[in-house]
Image (tube, rainbow, N blue to C red):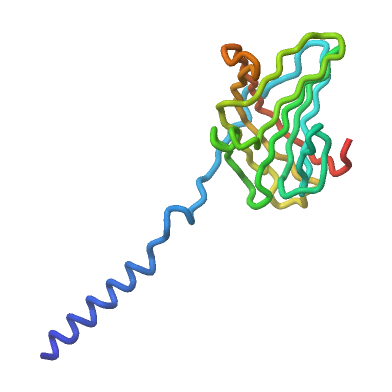
Length: 178
């Protein structure tokens, strides 16, 4: 009788230990890795900037407003044309990964301005963006983030027209909206 009691107690303790040691799949954050090889560069004759700010969002005209995102943006300015991509990343954590579903939910926005051109309007339809804080020990206004992204664009008026934007670059803080 004593042996049965100890065997039952041992079984209960083993079961409780296994149950409490397991975690849900959703609780474990996937580690994001990006190497710093083959960084993208600006086209010849263009000027580029790679910046981010925190607690921000975009208005309809792509100007900034207070919000819930860590907002990354890169801009390429050539004579007569300006191209910008805005990335709305979560505020928490030292890394993030956006998927096609996030792009379709308007977490990545593409904009081109050319007063003297006829431009086709594009929207993101596929791709990914991932980012890693390379200086997690520093405060946000001194941090550097490494982002990698491939965004597939489709013409809004003509879906058969496609383009791809690729970025792999370090982003610096800019807490003054300009």
